[in-house]
Image 1 (cartoon, rainbow, N blue to C red):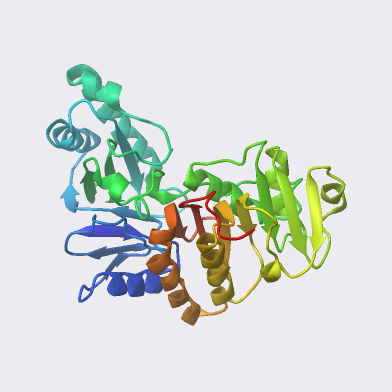
Image 2: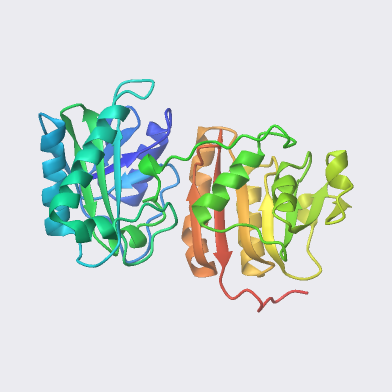
Length: 351
């Protein structure tokens, strides 16, 4: 079976997405925020699931009476199913109770398992990768999701499966990232951009140029400027005064959807409030015209019926991008984020 975690309240939307993706397959709700399907996940092209916060491919239901028994089950899997001499990652987390229930037990299971490796399979312990960077083709992933102290699901995704499923299998435990906090930012919207950087595995660099469409009050420009990048901010209203005074920011008053840069830029940033189909077409147009090397764009929804409007991105971006993701960020509200790297950048067909 395959398990999928989603944000609270998003279960119906992920269920519909799974039914569209796996024709004829039923998505069963096992617990709040946890669904399952049967059958193999496609790996010929990376699977895109916007509402799956994390995926556990080829999961198996297990039970264990104690922490020691859980650690022994993990040891058996690690020593028989992980490729020799290759990096692997380990996620152990609870999915029951409230207020962090089960977190201590998950930690104890991890410690007991690592102690077994330390005593009996030190080479596997040395290969354990604790990074949260995007997967490479040689990385495997072991996930244990506890649904109660003595029951859970174990997923072993041997390399290259995590990399093949990198648009719905994340290098973060349960696919979750803490929402960033910065009281100096113009608004909390900056947290979306910080999270998107982490998920993309890229950061703005000091020698890069960013276009920030619909920039006011300036939270996304604030992040890029703090990284040392140059920013062209486009909006009908000016940004916060200190940002407007920054010598690396150029403000252009106007309509975000009518702006075209004089030359291709490193980043397209857009968190503008607009109908989802307008933002979707904006992304596709900039990618087709190769106006940017990379992009991070928020797709904002007005109602449940808007969620299907993400489908053109799933259909068209694979041929336009070297890499991309489409997901509901932990920092998102009634919206999703699309980010990626455009293929053939530098061969722009426009001035």
